[in-house]
Length: 355
Ligand SMILES: Nc1ncnc2c1ncn2[C@@H]1O[C@H](COP(=O)(O)OP(=O)(O)O)[C@@H](O)[C@H]1O
Ligand SMILES: [Mg+2]
Image (cartoon, rainbow, N blue to C red):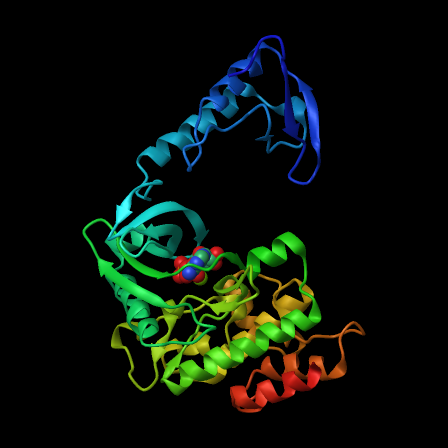
């Protein structure tokens, strides 16, 4: 609670600017008291006095009543929320906190109560669990596909289940950050670090391919780097067993458009590992430049750009990068899969020449 003798709180002007003193009047005193009484996901009080993130550029436009009702509506939504709170037990795993959000699921850091180790619990969203049986089946298939694999650069799976409330899998907890967030927070990666990550991804994908599995959704958000600098490829959610065509997938496009090869748009179920090589190229491009190779997000525009005009063939250019590196990225991003690298070994060979 706020103390009447000290009617000043610190408010961020925006996410990156330092705290600023704000004199509060009775109107927003009520708002700040209300915020101070709230608890965050870890059940800790939200300290309005210390850090209230105000999402308005001009403070004069803040209407405390509106902000309060906005927060109240968010809380109401959260109360109906399906996602587990801290302390909730799923299987034998006690939830600690949210670790990341993906397109289909939330991933929580948890403690396995019997083994006494940290684990990650990936939970399929409520909507998908109840309305998309085929996605639920793919989610469980991810667990089955990944559980067979054992590689230092692939996250390990310990368990999975389709419970009444939650469809989830339990996996190795990676204490780190995914590359999408890393780039958003810190900007582009150091060139040598990006090369090192690519080499490890080649190892992981080559190993998966030896076990007849391709990934189909390689992108920065699906790659984590731990505090000890281990690289872990995640989310074999769209992976498929090569030569075992899944009929339920017929006609569906699966993957993330901006990183996806042209052929994956046409028929995701018939792609081979060269589609992953394309996505690996798009990911490498992103790690080096801070941007994915296609700038637009509209599905239709991306499809047009990927197929129609050579003008839109993405290319890594500029004097910041060695020619050999540009050649590697640009070869991975070629439209025709026959013109790309054909194997992880040949790509790795060229990557090693860069180091
Ligand atoms: N094993 C893990 N340990 C820690 N965090 C994880 C782990 N797996 C995923 N995450 C975090 O959760 C996010 C979403 O996970 P992901 O498996 O990609 O879900 P989705 O299939 O919904 O895309 C990741 O980008 C990452 O930040
Ligand atoms: Mg993901």
